[in-house]
Length: 337
Image (cartoon, rainbow, N blue to C red; front, side, top):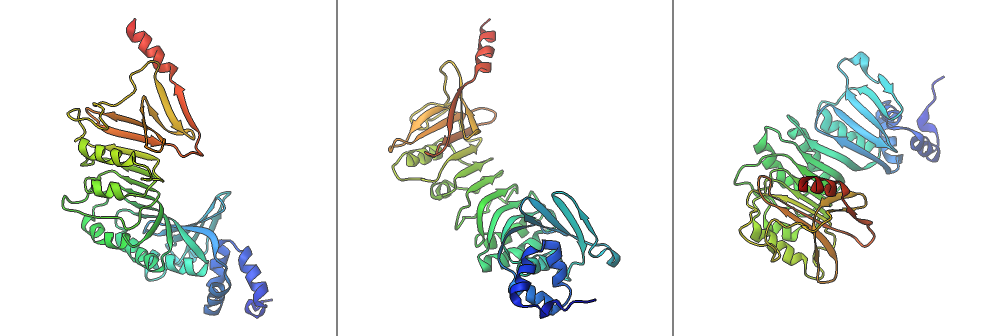
């Protein structure tokens, strides 16, 4: 016997919606326009998170499990499900606007308050840009944003104005090779920035950066730029959140010092040491550098075929391990023999 669900009291309906998983709540919302509106009105904001890479799959994350909405090839496949311990799949009909319109429908209907991941992959820039504009207008949090090494370079260049308005909180990764005249500045920095072709990232941006973790490859920084940054870091009160810096640049050489130290900068004492924080981010054979307020950092700068600066700073609450690398000792002894 059919049950008129919408005749139940709102408090009861709210509890029903609260107990639904994403697939169940989505199917309820498709029963009728009234049911869909009721779901939007009564659904509480959840700690569910959503992932979108511009294609025909949208993923919702719930307490370690993921629910994947796939575009069905045929009408007879609508609402077909495959359920597993952690990963679940359901084929559905995508709206005329494709994945972008479905994304907006899901965050509104299911009460989703944050985005776990957005990524630009080949052929997806238009869909991602459409969603990104709406998220920016709503000031909605995106934890991680990735730009892949796609062919639509100019489309991504045009998109970067929207990206500057987005609320990216945790990580920004960029693998794209931008044109030589490309220029971009973050309005607000995420916790981690990782750029594989970072020639456009200037020393002024680094000096203004509030990120905790910064990785820049193929950088245009030279010894003078790095010295300017480290001299500024040494001052009391500067870069309070900064913990990790890795910069690779062909312009790092042994012709001028950094922090009054000739390059390469490394610990040459015996035995060798490795420094790690909370079991991660190890630097082998760094030297200690001290901030004016007493904060300790560990610095290593290599020159040669892969010139790179590595810099590590610990938070007072971190566990710092300076470990003797006995395997290095054995190698040294073997070399001497």
